[in-house]
Image (cartoon, rainbow, N blue to C red; front, side):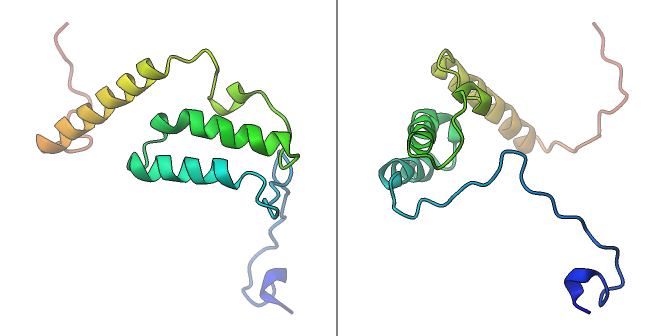
Length: 120
């Protein structure tokens, strides 16, 4: 009996389910390589900050949809609304990161202020 059947490990069998949206085929013919490389460069140059790479993300996903490498969907389903104000999004993220950095610099301890009532 193999381990995958649950026999060797003594555990219960795990039912494997396919992804909800189906498969995500590899780009064997490199139809979207340029868009993928631009996205990867953006992520590397931006230190992994995806907010700066939304245009590259849109281009990559659009290429995959145009070439039948994924199901066509509205980009808003990926959080890439055409109407999104990217400058406002970046500013909100910058403020969030600054707040986290401030907490770290001040010696923030998770849960320390839990249950403390603040004056209004």
